[in-house]
Amino acid sequence: MPIATPEVYAEMLDRAKREGFAYPAINVTSSQTLNAALRGFAEAESDGIVQVSTGGAEYLSGSTVKDMVVGASALAEYARVVAAKYPVNIALHTDHCPKDKLDGFMRPLIKISQERVARGEEPLFQSHMWDGSAVPLDENLEIAAGLLDECAKARIIMEMEIGVVGGEEDGVANEINEKLYTTPGDALATAQAVGVGEKGRYILAATFGNVHGVYKPGSVKLRPEVLKDIQDAVGAEYGKDKPFDLVFHGGSGSTLEEIREAVSYGVVKMNIDTDTQYAFTRPVADHMLRNYEGVLKVDGEVGNKKQYDPRAWGKAAEAAMAARIVQASENLQSAGRKLK
Image 1 (spheres, rainbow, N blue to C red):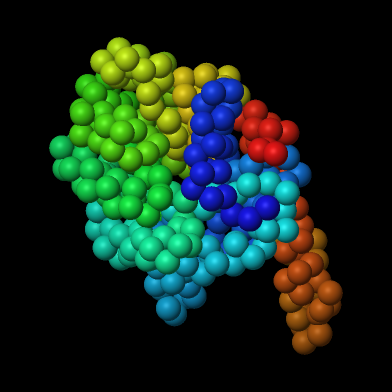
Image 2: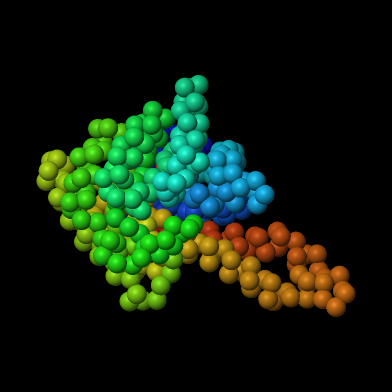
């Protein structure tokens, strides 16, 4: 199937909300991790979301180029070719974009999609995330309103964050404190500023103790009931059941019970990065350690080309990452539910 059109992406999210499941959103940094994501979704018979962060996009452009827009654009074009060979729908998304990178990442990508749409083409990406967690809520919402308007012109869904995800990702770091929990007041202010769909569609990363990275049990306290509280508060004000399409960030290490509870409150997308990074790298480390004398030219020997050929360890890495995505699809109950 081709990359999801805006209509297909909207139906994906609507169906997840309606039927009570969520899509894994997998961060990729290369063509190989993209292929692993596509393989994982196909093996799970799940539609899904592939996303790239600012750092991932810069890496994709080449270590000497370091151009986030070039890297993101290259990924999107490559994905359009290879995804067509898989029997699932894939939406393309850009992850956390803080204020200081808007002009170098999100805004130029939206502009590209606006130009594509004006020519009668599909947008380059199906959604983009504005991460305003580092600025005051009023400023966050003011910027979000402007971006939402621009995204709507490009037939793009915007993702935004209220509250703070702790830990660190791509240089954006936040402390683990009470700011990790979004309040009903924050949610009501959000609905007042950007609406509940009538001003353009968006998905909302509300926080309930989320932390990027992996922590030992007990270090992070997730409170999924926070999501219910904000849905109830805004729903009562606007006469809508579960008015927000929610996103679960920082979910590595979460229990299945916590994941399923969050989904029951309207989560339709769960970001997965740390776990798939490890899944990809673990078999590479295993290969290098088991084949030490083959991958290195030890003591002047010639090594073993079959062992240091990147395809030898790359295939194992791809398979392991794909298997982790199947597991994520099963946890989020999107497995076996691809759109026909």
